[in-house]
Image (cartoon, rainbow, N blue to C red; front, side, top):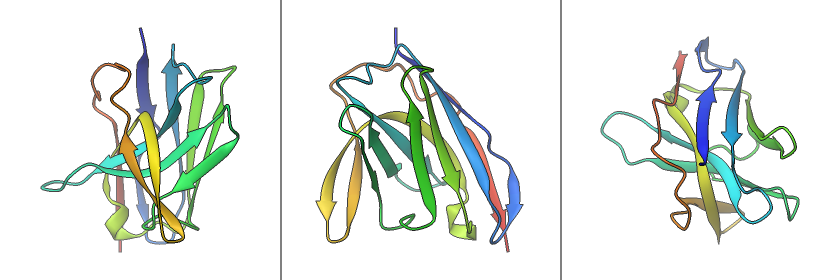
Amino acid sequence: DVQLQASGGGSVQTGGSLRLSCAAYGFPFDSYAVGWFRQAPGQEREGISCISSSEGTSYYAESVKGRFTISSDSAKKMVYLQMNNLQPEDTAVYYCGACFVQASGDSYVVYVDNRIDFGDWGQGTLVTVSS
C-alpha cells in the first residue's frame, strides 16, 4: 500500500526557512510524480510543487516559484521541500501526494493525481509564518 507522511513543519518568522520531509512508502516513483500541497482554513487545497523522478523534472506553482525547492530520493522513498523566504501567506497545513502539472505562463498548476490510491491525506504538517 502507498502511504505518504509529511513532517518537518514549525513556526518561523517572515523570511525564515523550513525543510519538510515526506516519507513515501510504497510510492511508484518510476511511473508517477509526487509533490506537495497545502491548505489554509477556508481555502481549497493548493498544489505548490511536483517532481517526476523518472523524468528528472520538477515544477512549481507561481506562489512558491523561486522560493521553494523540491527534491526526491526514490531509493529511500523520500521527498523533500526546502522552503526559503517564507511569508505569512505560506501559513497552511502541508501535505504530500501524487501529482501532475499543467503549464501556466512561466510556472505550473499542480493537481492531485487520482489515478492511484495513496490513501488519505493524513494530518499533514503545519507551517506557521509570523510577520
